[in-house]
Length: 216
Ligand code: AP5
Image (spheres, rainbow, N blue to C red):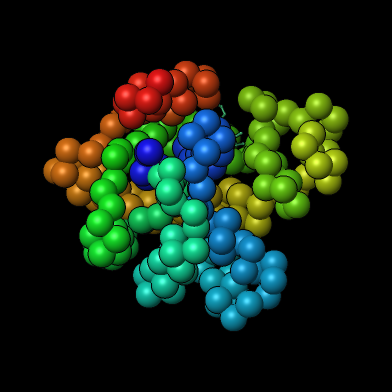
């Protein structure tokens, strides 16, 4: 019954590995980034407010994100566990999560820190393509679609994310270093952190995480 956080810089592969882990353990994946993009697509007030921050590579304010993720966790079927991707991203968000989980008598099992250097991230994000319909993630180099620019899973035309422009990528990495990296120590102190070399093969990383969860 794994309750997992995936922590790591933009492009570390949180979405890619998160989706495989969710399938493997039959748990819901709760991605703050995906939820924001869905809100934007639906042109909700939250989505429209978040857009400016996302396009600039900045974090969306804690108050908005915490309310959003709390709602997603409340609505998700978490009987088998859950996986958080991209949340928490600040100490304030981590503390809010602690309070929420305490109130539900739930404890986290592991926080996987996906470690990658900035040069690898920039290259990966520049080559990332996503399916706007089903959310499948591709990479022109490491995971190309079978047919150029077409989603293998649903046949939709693939797109580049708006925040994958080189100048925005640079800003997102800076913001990660300043605001999200302190969470590594936060969770290490709670003895929950497991560091994963996120430059190895995707399947290898998933199997390391499964071993750490003790659920092979
Ligand atoms: P979000 O959508 O969460 O973006 P991110 O954290 O920047 O992470 P990415 O989705 O870019 O990367 P990823 O780690 O999931 O990598 P992926 O699997 O795609 O957030 C977007 C924005 O929303 C933020 O900038 C912020 O404004 C806002 N936001 C979201 N959450 C927030 C919060 N909690 N608080 C405040 N604001 C928030 O992989 C990347 C590429 O690499 C892919 O092409 C993939 O195929 C490839 N790849 C992955 N692993 C490997 C591997 N091992 N080898 C080779 N290629 C690989």
